[in-house]
Image (cartoon, rainbow, N blue to C red; front, side, top):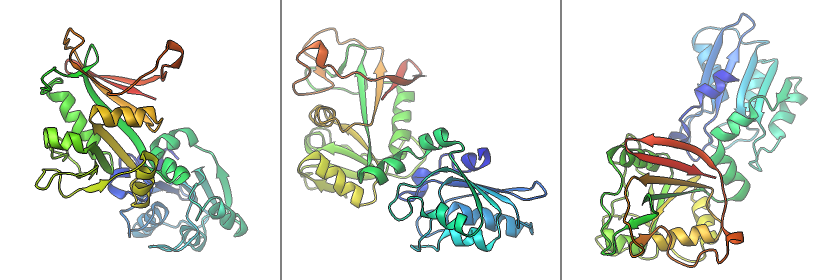
Length: 320
């Protein structure tokens, strides 16, 4: 299972909306062959591992296959992985997680057991749940996993009273924010941010694909954000729309009104805060959120700091 998890490391963005699954086969003689899911239309992890073994001329009959997600048992763009495993005469399959997709949902493991394959579940479950977090959330809710990204001063401000804000954080933090963009299927901002800042919302300071650009409202003609998807309406409906488009993860990047709307509606799964050693030193600078907050200390939102990373002189803080 450790080899299967390693095979799937860092591939989710390149294979989305497929799940970033890893698989590993150990033959009876101790040889190990690994594979991971390919982009849509390509083979799944289990088939890739079987191909790797076949290319090496290895005998997998009676071997063990570990996979981070339950093998599929239906025909979509590819055939069912269960049939490939059964045809290869694998004797034992180790599965980290049951696939919550209604097309699978336990039927893959049931098919293998009916064919005489020994199936073990739950091995490496916690680590794989982290690795497949966005896919699992999407399949369970029909909506993308939401990351709210914020850059601020140490006293919680995002811009000066005249709205100037470049550059609060340093180069290393900005490069990391672009890597964060590349890790998401889509990036979302409000039309007000587009009118005020005319951002491109592309990945420039990191290696990776540009995410789908989503604007809440109408982007002006000729804005740098084009081509983009323009959506409006209640935020849960916006997220459901994106989920139907195959978006597993979306990063909300601004501005303060949109950030407040997502936070206030309880729709944020992860907060990523870039905090700079900067003090505006007054109450007239612009805040992270625009809108009413908790009216009493008993109503404040409380999470946990799951990770704190130093980036040059800045801090990256992840809240759950």
